[in-house]
Image 1 (cartoon, rainbow, N blue to C red):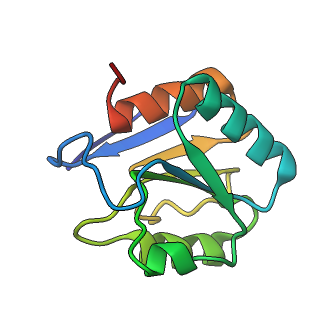
Image 2 (cartoon, helix red, strand yellow; image 1 turned 180 degrees about the vertical axis):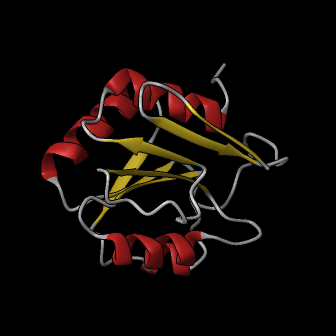
Length: 137
């Protein structure tokens, strides 16, 4: 596994897995308790033409029921333990790609494919999504 940090606050870890695999459910799942973050993330994804849905941080039932999306965007601001727990639930052999968004309190050991620091900048989010899911033709 290789990883790198970029000067604009994007931390990326890439495994040898293919960039994009379809799963039951598909699309992007946004999990945040912050309404402003949700609006920015959903707006960016819709502008990109990517289907998304939002869940409250406490609701992981669709993921547990096998509706694994292609990508999960998890806002972990001020919730390091919750972030570890949710990321751990989402981790696994056939898991979705995971972008964790947060401030400086996001723990380094979170099993995320990318970590984005707040504030959420749509262009950076778009770059991260394309990097994990590949470009859409």
